[in-house]
Length: 227
Length: 321
Ligand SMILES: Nc1ncnc2c1ncn2[C@@H]1O[C@H](COP(=O)(O)OP(=O)(O)O)[C@@H](O)[C@H]1O
Ligand SMILES: [Mg+2]
Image 1 (cartoon, rainbow over the protein chains, first blue to last red):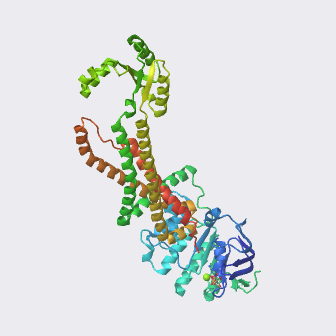
Image 2 (cartoon, rainbow over the protein chains, first blue to last red; image 1 turned 45 degrees about the vertical axis):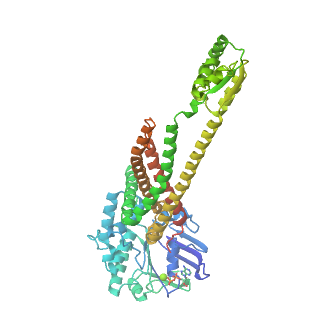
């Protein structure tokens, strides 16, 4: 599903955020990326999201080599990847409904279809009935659920999340993680970056540990090495 | 859990997708207007500036068109005078006149016999007695040739003059093409000036719209980034701004139309009175339905163009980080 082969990422500043990184995430898998701050977790997710381009190496995502995908093709590519961010990236001048509907509007779906899917997505994050409100009225945890609803509303096969629980207390964090688990249970490939090791270990999924932009060890919860 | 991975567009018929596409355009268009109404003061000012900029060349254009109307067919009042040799007798003169009428470039020929001319001159000048003292009539017989309507430009007139001079009985031909040339030159100059003004002001309008849209893009940076993050194409991100530009242009066009019509309303009375004093029924003419259509469509296109330039230059730079 997601395959990195000897990927390097050097920022314009000259900083090597990732070096010689190879990994494989299989379809339907749920994976956690951990590592200290600056280890390259966000960079890895940004490469998957095509927000950044790799400096060297190959990226094969859903069977397609996207390493040098043309700029024009990026929007269409991104529609197959649901993204969740630590700061939610919601639009506060729009209603909750419009926030969640955005990917479907972009995809060109008819209004009636959008309505159905937005309500279904909001139902999944337990926020149905608040569509007309502004996200600004919601708590941080609820805003994150709106962000998740937007990420899954178009049913992308891949869901990536960068520190989705970064601003939340442990209880809310667990709730959000369970939500991701439920999406994974219906076949969505999920990749979550988090530095909250305790929480990550609690979830019982493969953990990819990064350190200084390199693989520090990828282990199954039982401790056996996956690669 | 209803979520299963797959494309968002699956299972939706093409006709419904097309319908959704046009509906979405209409929504974006109305949405852009709604957004503009969110900042009424600033946007009314922008639209007013565009309107005034557009009204100026339109006013000049109407001035020229009305001037042309007023001068009517000035060009056709040009006559060519052919002064004949003394030897030509009345019968011969009439024959020549008849032949000239067959020329395609001639619409009328009037004969002024020397005696008539002298009598007229004596009467008009008051030199009657002095002229009586003359032994011979110093004035020649004259043919006054009026060119046909479509042969009145300076070059054709000059050609006609040469042709007339080639008649054996002709002593001298006088074509006064200078003032026709001057009149045409002045008209040309005014038209060119109007065209140039129109061009510059159209440029100004695209710049005004472009700058307004540029600021709008700057203000909506976050929204643009998020839209691109969730898969919005360049065209999708651009669309609301293009419609915004279209509205600015259309609004400016309507303001320009109102300004022009109001000015005409104010000028119509005095112009009619002045024309009345000259015994003319001249009336100021407005843009007419065709002109109004051109103005509205043209201003909308200018707004669109301004926005097109601004979005081409600035939207690309905004990428999610
Ligand atoms: N846009 C950028 N420009 C330059 N350096 C960057 C940029 N983004 C991240 N970095 C650097 O790359 C390294 C990895 O960063 P990041 O991927 O954000 O790590 P993490 O998410 O694991 O904290 C860090 O040293 C960071 O300073
Ligand atoms: Mg990070």
